[in-house]
Each structure stands twice: as C-alpha cells, then as structure tokens.
Image (cartoon, rainbow, N blue to C red; front, side):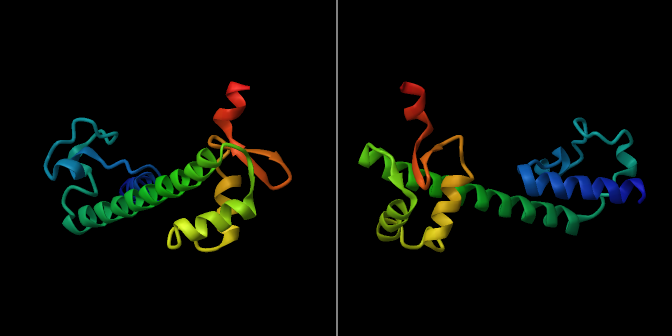
Length: 138
C-alpha cells in the first residue's frame, strides 16, 4: 500500500471512530500546519474535493451516532435516577418502551446498552442494574 492510500485509510478510520478531521478538511483550505504528513505537496487529500466531502460525510455519521448514544444513555439513566433504586433490565426496558418508544429497537437493545456502558450502569445482581455513581457514594 502506498503512502497516499495508507493516509486515506488512517483518515477514514480516525474520522469514523473519533470524529477527528484533518485540519485542511476542517478549514477547507491550505492549513496543513498540524498534519502528520511531512510533505503537504504529496498529500492525497488536498487536491480531491470529493474526498473532502466523503470525510465530512463520515464525520456527520459519527456525530449522529454519538448524539444517539448520549440520548440513549441519558434516557436509561433518567429512569434509574427517578426510581432511586436498581431495577431489572426488563423493567427498565418496559419503562423505556413507554417513555421513549422510538429510541430503542427492542427490550434486548436496552439490556445491551446497560451491559455495554459500565462507566454509567453498574450490574448489581443477575440482570439488575443501578448507577455506577451510587456505588461511589456507598
């Protein structure tokens, strides 16, 4: 793989996973001062406006996913805060289904969000989740 293609793969991966954009894409210009490529003249991105648009599209997808993630975690957290005690994931899913009908695909997706976000949700017993911040206070 040549340097140009590896730079594109690096950019695509980084934009898709972190939302990072190269300085030249963010400013739509020749600002390459913060670029890891040592030779701006050899940059495979600068002369390709379609690729600029593609990277911006990737970033917009990343931003949309992040916003949805924040909304889902916030919704689940608000249910637990309001009830002031740990709940079984099926109960959380039932409440979420009523209060946020379009936010989750299924009850199992609620369980997945609880399990995959241990920084926010603490498994207490089999299938029962509380908030991690409750454990910190105890």
